[in-house]
Length: 113
Image 1 (cartoon, rainbow, N blue to C red):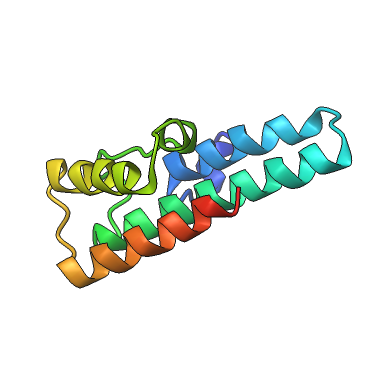
Image 2: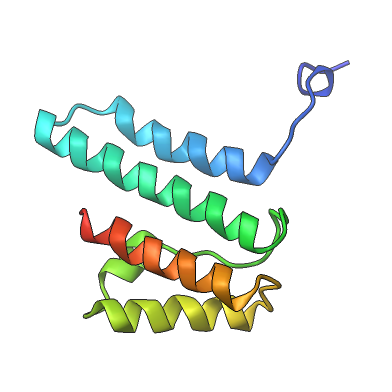
């Protein structure tokens, strides 16, 4: 029996993405840059968790929101529309109220960067 077969894996793909992001932290950065990196990672993880909740716990919902891509959009309203369109394109089952709360919180989170 292989080592992997001995351990249960839950949320494998999401966990692999987190491990990959954490790998970046093994490099040396200045204190201020490390604070920013940790903040970005925290927001990326929050986005993944909230999107999973919007899709009723489905990890394989097909949606990937990249923080860099969102930050590259000019205004908060453009970011909001982009994320909303992505959720609709992937048939998000959440209520409009939950989606609106997520979008409001996302814009607030991004404003901290």
